[in-house]
Length: 276
Image: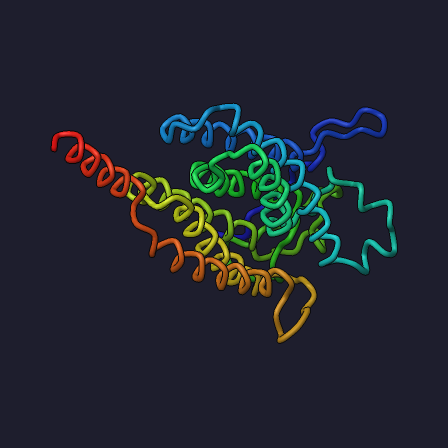
């Protein structure tokens, strides 16, 4: 058994200056799957469909902008040398933490203004979000984006197409994105299994954030990104922040009494007063 060869052209079809890439198709598939699953969970949680579309619209727009900005910040030298390439979304380069941070902020503002149940929406979105992330990595693997170092392992990826973004053609690289994708799928399976048992609003999303931050921190050791501080990369520093935030949020939310239990006690108390 030897390394896995990927000879697929990252561009599906080229028409003039426009090229449809597998990466773009994977992102669209990720968004479609994530929103579809969120709508399914929203129905179970009795959240109106319009609320999901409202949050999704703002979240996706803010998320794409944030994901690109965080990626550019992590590869600043490259984009300072070619500023116009910042707009080349179709060639890849989206940082998920940028999508999470900016996407959440973009969705939170209208949610607060319109009184949407934001924490409940986040719980409904958590399984779809991590599933979408896993699907998005397929595009990265096809075009050779965010690989690990050269490797002798039998599951190393060898790119032979001239359009691939791999650092070198014909050289096996560690599939760091593949590792992250497998872990994302494991997180999705876990969240899907416990989603009906987690009753406190916001807690399922916090569990997602903790598990994904742990995933990102670990996998980033195999990435070739620039060391930013303390011997860690930007994604790892953000992962530590995500881990810290999720632990604090988990402890805070865990102290809340189950809203169903509270409403049940209130109903019993009211019933007793009526029958006195």
